[in-house]
Image (cartoon, rainbow, N blue to C red; front, top):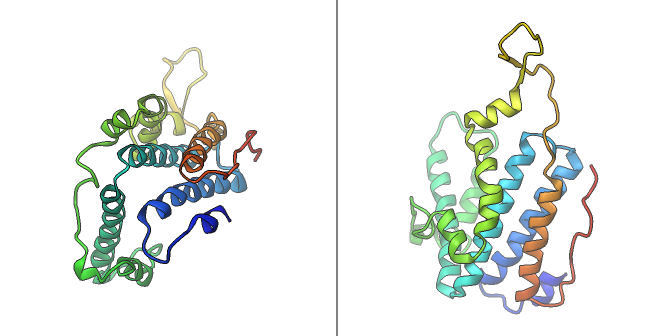
Length: 220
């Protein structure tokens, strides 16, 4: 409702759509984790990483406060959609999760895809760490991003925590054994609520009177 109330134009609005879009994006991730009770698993770590990156990116966009930067962020995303569409268009063995027609539709949503550039780098000349420094949220990056990224990239630390336990036989040398059953990891809901509220606060500073905040950790 607040999105519709603050939508003042029928033209393309990169700033308005992106600010609210990050809010919707984070709330959906949080909602899916609660609904599926997966917040104490590996998927919870991946969702937390996505939310942290969304918060840092949004903070940077607000810090720059430049219409060209908002548009560049949107154009970069459209270019990535176009790239995915072109790569999958001629594949014989297509991934089952990709909706080719949807990719084509979004790639042509703002303008014909022939006029959209594909940037193979980042949408800025900075990596996320440098973005967090400029945006004044390096502490969030330090606290959350490195370890959750280990789960995204499948680094050894993540593989170790999620899949192995130490043998309890005192005659053995504390060697690793596979954890046969899936056991819960430390949960991410409290952290997700914190990041979500930070994003909601940003939305409220840009479009006042939202008055939306999660006041307690949602229970699975």
